[in-house]
Image 1 (cartoon, rainbow, N blue to C red):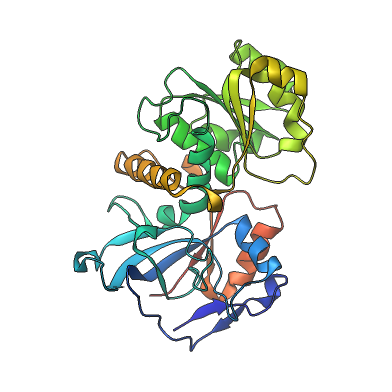
Image 2 (image 1 turned 135 degrees about the vertical axis):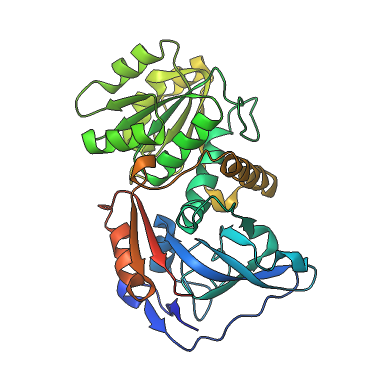
Length: 337
């Protein structure tokens, strides 16, 4: 079968296309998926830069396709199901950038008929990360659902990013008021399309003043993409007992303002989805599944998440597009069936 592999760490050029990788067989508790679309995350190129524990690695955690075989212990009824995948390559050699991949049964989640394979490949890491960030506050909720965030205001930093878009869509589905910060009108339009009721362009206005005008009592949850750059802003606009959930490394060092944080009982919470407890991950998968069933999650320009397609043979270019940081939206790889 056709697959993208790398055998050494490095830039996108270490990714190579092979036509003769054996089709994997599912083991106990596993399913094999005929891939349709593979999604590229920032952690995919970072993993490639860092190397792999396996002699040969297929990249990419996220994707979508159709179950075509099951291993012992998995119901035969799963064959033929449309699914979206998450963490396919985490501590495993088989990611989604290949014609067939094998994952544990629980990591192949049913994709409703009304949801496209493109949307399925957009879920995974960004939406599971966003769910975790939205549910780490004291008192929960542990799992999002309609009404779970009623009465709460969520600040999404970088509302046009992958996790930012996911956080906006999930928070709105759960009933929150969403404020998003952006760095220009194009990104502002995307955050609005995702569902943010309020968008603040921090290059045009003082962000703290504008956010507190919108939410005079402060925001309850901050989904933070740039913790070092936004530490002062976050503590200024946070409500009492708020949480700042940061999921990305902006290259700086977070210096927590001690006294203001204590006065507000403010929590600074790091989020790395791969290490999230299994129960929390199950809650996230369940919530995303429910939101999909409600037709509340979408991809594409109209949903604030532009999609950029690459063929499997150009996976290196797809990785380069994500690694450059200049591509706004979701980079997807179309896998031939």
